[in-house]
Length: 254
Image 1 (cartoon, one colour):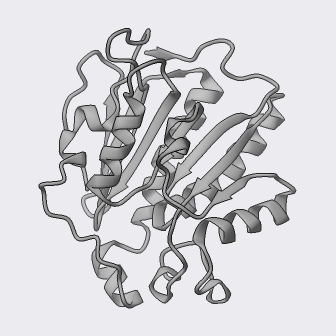
Image 2 (cartoon, rainbow, N blue to C red):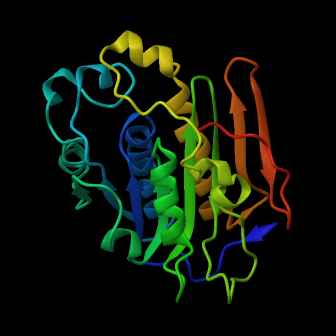
Image 3 (cartoon, rainbow, N blue to C red):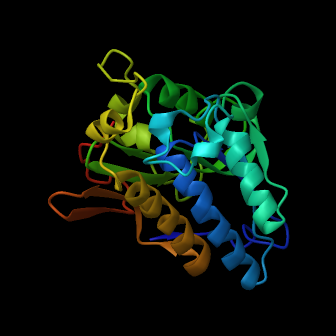
């Protein structure tokens, strides 16, 4: 069992960074709106999101991502966050660039990575386990392939000092997620049909929900029985990742 620190939730909003707002990340942003309202309803400060993505909206994105025809050619992060701010009266932030450099080295309550390359995860891993003091309190990594996926919530830590009640991060459990020597298909899809051949229509939504539900359980119940989940849409199988010193390894999606 993992228990949340008593002072983690307060009247101040939590700082949340979302790295990548494509198929999964755009669904995550939508769910974070609900999470914010729920926390405020319970008397807390909610969350303040900073979204990072260097890409612009392409025709193939419309079928699986939260963008419309009118968004074509526009920066994904700015388009999505402007829409949320206008609808909800928020002051969330958009950055039309990768989550690296100063952003990755900044202090965050939660970092949610929705990236689709091993190189990107390697960059995140280096920032999460940088020497010095611990910058991120939680790292939620969400990944999927055509019909399977996983969401794993971990606690980054200084390798020398560590942290109390640590949760292994995705890249610790599955180093292959950041192994750049392994092949991966990061070519952009040229059509909606090609995009759907790479990833199922609702796999991103399912992956995002798995990750968001972990955060909700942690914040609402102030504890976690499981800090991750693996799923397969075709076999209808879902495997939780229990909070143990050495969680069972399960092959993840890229």
